[in-house]
Length: 268
View (cartoon, rainbow, N blue to C red):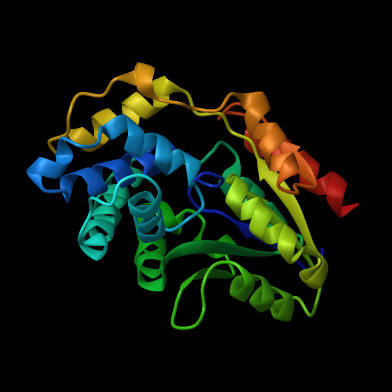
């Protein structure tokens, strides 16, 4: 495992909270709208868009929604700040996928470097690693890569990891189609092996996240029938089409164990 690194997505691969993030996005966007503009968009459309644009920063999702759907939100920066607050509080109540901390520790002991890559501002990640949740994996993480001046998720992070491993192999584990597609652009340049994390989220999980968020923020009633969530086979197909070299599936209880098996096979 010398000269190798694993590049992890915190939300959705290490921590089972991808049902929370799109809901937090929708809530922050909707809550920052004027009362008049709230009548022009429903919360389910926002949640669906949040899932569709998984992998993008919240601010970028909001700008894209304004451009593609309805130019309703005037202060994206304020709404993005609210998202960070909502997602942070709700995400702290989520759990790691079973065996995630143990897998990180094993890889670290084997000599593989572990990095978290995120579109979040660096300070948010730095604050999080000192929390009870972050401390669980702190000793197994070499560095958390967030958004800094002139340094952000994507090419900058891949280049940095390549330097840290002296041009060694990078295993990139991601759940979002956009993340796998971006890694595919630079796979040859930086020796990236892309592993799609195909964890399925159903409407009940979204409802649980919605209940969690709406317990502290006044939101409209959720209509689960209006949610458009991809089926497992669609997730796998989309990840492969985006360039994933391998895809892992499974329940919250066993998907990380399946990933460990896959990493061992790819390493050999």
